[in-house]
Length: 97
Image (cartoon, rainbow, N blue to C red; front, side, top):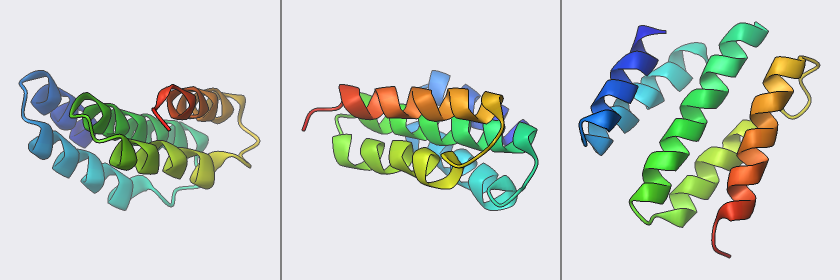
């Protein structure tokens, strides 16, 4: 998932919108995959997107990204996917209400 790496690099360089754009492409390309390894990648992509929004003090959009992980993958039978879902749930709890 080179697009994730591109998004991560953009994020590290302070290019939040470019990172979000790359992350959105990952979700569009791989978001419907039934393969657990891709689901893990997409889930981490959405968490990263939420983290960028949270860092920019946009709790609403951060919540949307984290909740998307839960919505997409909470019923997965993969323990690896569930581990990422749990991270998303923790991030939701850390957001201001």
